[in-house]
Image (cartoon, rainbow, N blue to C red; front, side, top):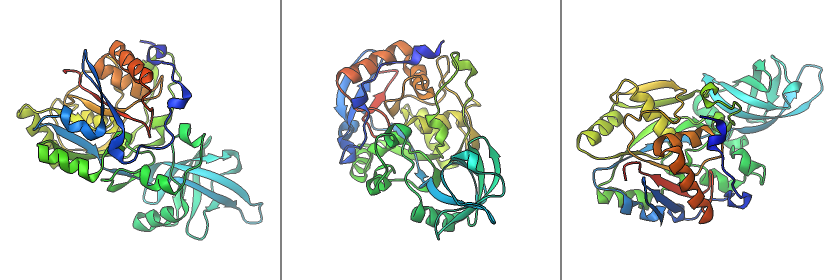
Length: 347
């Protein structure tokens, strides 16, 4: 297994810079081991059965991009851009800083009248920030001064705006803490969820606070040497029971997004699904034996990424290349704001 095995050529004009509206208007590629069908997210119920269980990630994206000024007693003022990447405790966040060379431990960064933080530690471009507030007060301040942390392949082409506050958030987002959206779930709206429920398709929620590491490239030629970033997640007793009951009744467990899949498989590491809470750095690649996942609804992923490896583990590397070749030929829209796929390894 080599990194090049997960590469493909993507025309840049297929990278979506805005989502479809309404949300379920996105196209949906439905793939089994042999067939590929072109559909839409609005028709998702066509491909699901009564008794199937959709597993949704209810994390909430925070406005993690902050611009402030460094303040030192008697020192020069310097402009600093930070992007929060992971919570480290009460009021503590790890962040990427640009330019990081302007900061040292002990510096204070003012993000306007609403918010300030002290640099507690520094490791290269990564810093540890101690904010002057926490909880709901910090959440409110971030809403006032922060910007939506768009993925690099979008941010390089346009600035975030007010539309992204809504577009880059699922309709069931509940628990603040993510700095990237569980993008497959962006395709759902309330009418689609209600229609699926009426059809007998069940759903449950898990939480995985998606970190900025989801966009980090794999830099080693041997994927087995890649180190995954850790993300905090939780599966409640009710969610674990729903998964177990679905499998016992012969229904399919279909996570919506790779984040929901990763937290599910983490909680099933012992063989059976159980309530779980903590950090996961699970790395799913070809050779992995799935324990509770019967299918996956997901967007189209970056070349040479760990997510490309994950879908290759689910469907087989050769099959995934055929699926992606079809998506490119049919001009599906790629990445976070793009179209979706429903991957069903057993048909």
